[in-house]
Length: 263
Image 1 (tube, helix red, strand yellow):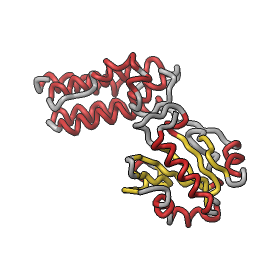
Image 2 (cartoon, helix red, strand yellow):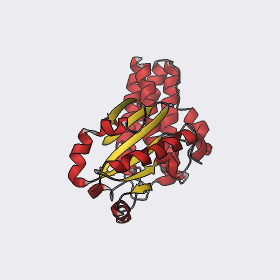
Image 3 (cartoon, rainbow, N blue to C red):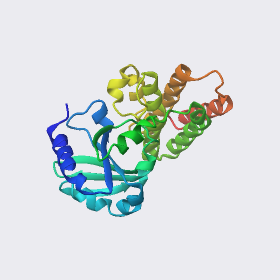
Image 4 (cartoon, helix red, strand yellow):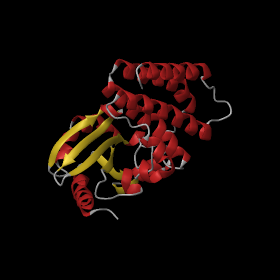
């Protein structure tokens, strides 16, 4: 079921956008494809006539303003997606508007639901590709993880506890959460919906959350390292090159520093 606020926005968009000849399709992705509730964002994808793409990108705020009472909006470079316009509409309702040239719709992370197609070209272009969500690269993670553990340890040792807590959140969002979700057979989207998709791992994740206290920070770093090893052991292919010396050195330093500082 799509909440009324979200549905009203979609229906208004479907009334408005056909009059813009530069737009040739509208699709929805994100929560609408799986589990949507009153707290969900609305993710909309606009297929754009290739010859008009640069013009649309330059004037997309005008298009966004025509879809509802826009309170604020900004582009998505900070999440690696400059085609995205992140909007807050009156309601309030968070809506992500992605503008994609028809030539580029084949390459995507998910298969959206087509809501409107001017002449069939949008659906045809989508049929030539298939959505593929990026998966965790276990070797990429292993090459970095123990360096990250050392980094967190040095910040806790120095007393930069907010930095330590922030970095532990980085590890949960970019390493631990995606690995736990993958093990559970779900899309590895950070720690999104972790409470429901990977409940088995929740106590271990809770142990990685530190208070603004040096001892707590050291304990949380130990917990993050332990959780990583358990998650990795469930997923690691036989050819994974483990950074054993880096692991041993980082953990020995963590143990020595936490003991030395009273952690």
